[in-house]
Structure formats: C-alpha cells, structure tokens
Image (cartoon, rainbow, N blue to C red; front, top):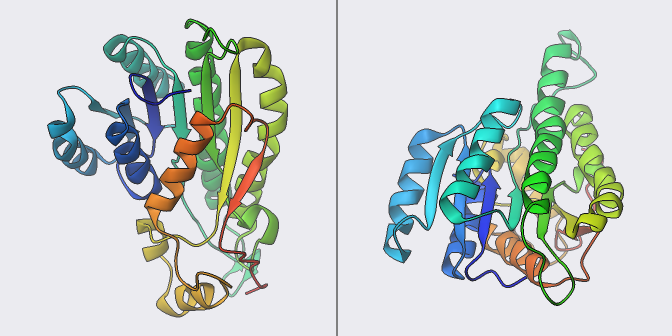
Amino acid sequence: MEISGKSFLVTGGASGLGAATTRRLVAEGGSVLVADVNEAAGAELVAELSGDGPGRALFQHTDVTDEASLKAAVDVAVAQHGGLDGAALCAGILGAARIVGRDGPHDLKLYRRVVEVNLVGTFNALRLAAAAMARGEASAADGERGVVVMTSSVAAFDGQLGQAAYAASKGGVASMALPAARELGKLGVRVAAIAPGVFATPMMGELPDDYRTSLEAQVPFPPRLGQPEEFAALVAHIFENRMLNGCVLRLDGALRMAAK
C-alpha cells in the first residue's frame, strides 16, 4: 500500500509511539484520525500537523475499550477521509505488580484493567477497523483493502518480574496476529504486529529511574532506548510491504530481558 493519499486510524495516537506514527503517516501524505483519551495532547498534535494540510490529522476522543467510542472514531475516519485503509493500534498501559507482593496478592482489578486496555482494546480496534476496510475498494494489484498493525511487546516473550498482567496482555496481541491474518486475508486485509523493546515514551517515564537504566544496559546495540520515530518507520514499512502478514516483528536492538 502506498501511504500517500490513504486514510489511517492510530489508536493511542496522541503521544509516544502513536504520535510518532501519526507524524510519519502525515509526512508521507496520509490522512490520520488520532484516537486517544488525552484531549490536550491530541489537540496539540493536530495543531502541529495543520501545516501539512487542513484535515490531514483529526482528533477524536476515544476509549479503545468502549465499543461505541471506538466505532465513532472509525466512522469519523471513514466519513472525513473517504474510507479507511490502515490502522496502527498503539494504545496501551503498563500496570506493574508482583503476583504476590508485600501487600498481598496481585490486585485483580489492575490485572483486568491492563488486559482490557492492551488486549481487548486492541481486538476491539482490529475488528472495527477491519470491517471498515473490508467495505473499501480492493487494489488492482493484489486485491488489498487494508492493513492493521498491532503493538505487542518483547514482554510477550521475555516478561520480567512484576509484568504478569502486561506480558499476558501483550502475549495475547502477539498470538492474534497469525489467526487474524489468516481470516482477514480473504477480505484483502493484512495484519501484523510489532514487539518493541525499551523505547523513549511517556510510558517509560512511569518506571523508576534505576529500573529504566537497567533496561537500557541490557540492549546489546545500539545501547540506548529506541526512538519512537524508529517504531513509526517500521509501521510505515509494514503498510508498504505486502508480504509482511501474520508476523510479529521484534524491534529491540537484540534485547532479551533478564528476569528483573
């Protein structure tokens, strides 16, 4: 798929990996519906990108765990940009806690919240975006109608102490890529996932300094946090490369996280 002239939905698109993806897609000529709960950050990003063309980036307050809220975002993208061609699903939260900690067992509400946002929210966006894409015109070359890029994490494979909820949610996202691609391929929709390592995002800022420093030290090369722009570049490549389908691509500088 060529990004220029196409319509995209980016969940969690107002900050971090999602904001970098929004900027990349707009820079390459795409139109983006930024779906996020952070209205201030969303408005600021849309204002920043207004010079690229009126309406090229629009913001819609969106809760990915709410069916009506997410459907409204998809409907706005379709109505304003003439359809939906791609979706980058970047909304997510951390929620670190030990299974049995100093204060007792893991808070079950916290576990459910992490899974609800990261896994159920991703599936909610996947199903609604794919349905909108399936109604679009197929490309003349391969019959492609759309592409969905989901965000997993290296924690899906190398989950650390305190990451039971987060690793489970991101492992679920990784596991969805292949069955989703097999099913949606009949509709001309590709599905892939990225499993980023440690990236310089607001989410990383929520971690204690010593923990973040420890993670950086584990990256073989380059020995630093990943930049959101590097994540966005891979999202763009997946959109453009039609043979990337049903896969989970690690983007981590060869990081394999230790137990803690």
